[in-house]
Image (cartoon, rainbow, N blue to C red; front, top):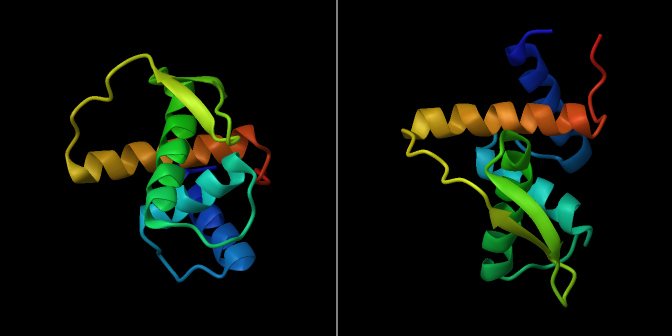
Length: 116
């Protein structure tokens, strides 16, 4: 299955399960993946919490690419990651492509997509 087809399936997954708008910004996906990784469910989050949730998602998503490694959970139950390698400086469109690839890989790894 082509990457673009997988991405459409992921967009549909978020739309159907979370009511996201059509073609939401990548940060929306990152925020929702961060909530999934934290395991906290839907609740009110402070602005700092939202930034931290996106950071958790980025670390988790880039872990298979060798940039981060899961370390442990802090005293509040938030996952902590060690940075193993600097993420290269990328242009915004390149960042977007890397995150899309990482999100697709996450969905495959977590068996969230049916791939035929």
